Length: 72
Image 1 (cartoon, rainbow, N blue to C red):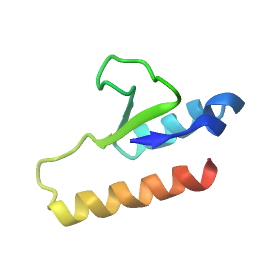
Image 2 (tube, rainbow, N blue to C red):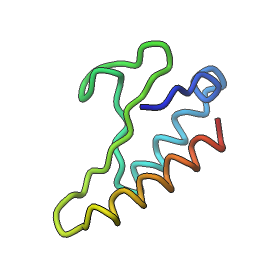
Image 3 (tube, rainbow, N blue to C red):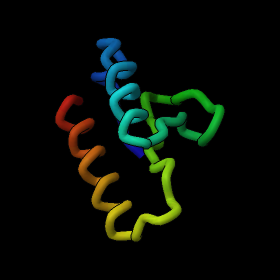
């Protein structure tokens, strides 16, 4: 879960979502798939799980989240 009020207010969230989608991450609202954000809270999760070790999945997610936080 990330709180992204800056990206939401400036309209830059869409470009961040597109970049995350290209890296095989999903961005969803606070209540998961099909939900909208509430209070600028978003879920970011990996879309690929088969053939990826837990360490690799967590490392890639951590790197992506850090980049989004930097943009925030």
